Image 1 (spheres, one colour):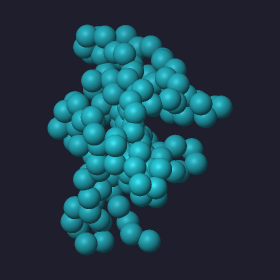
Image 2 (cartoon, rainbow, N blue to C red):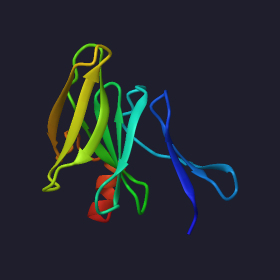
Image 3 (cartoon, rainbow, N blue to C red):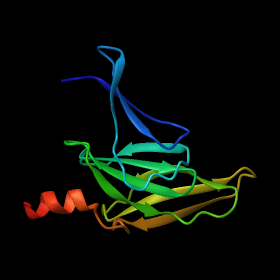
Length: 130
């Protein structure tokens, strides 16, 4: 099984590095990149989904088995706020997002797990078998 390091970058891109061969394995695809710095990465509790939160308040999802992009959600952050931490809710139907600012103010938001953007045409075509 390959050993990989998953890294989120300031340009909003998530990259997988092959540690055995010390090289870039892949850049994760997406269809709505925001150019906002990736602040938090996590896996779902069932280890099937990679989740990335950026400083612009966007939460993006990838299927870990295929690394296909699954969609995104928006965490409405205010001025000077950013996502500081994320975890899956106990029921698994939402992401708990800790939002904070540079002054130390924090709040917890519950974001339902329903991506707000449709799948890209190529993904819809694969699903329908065309």
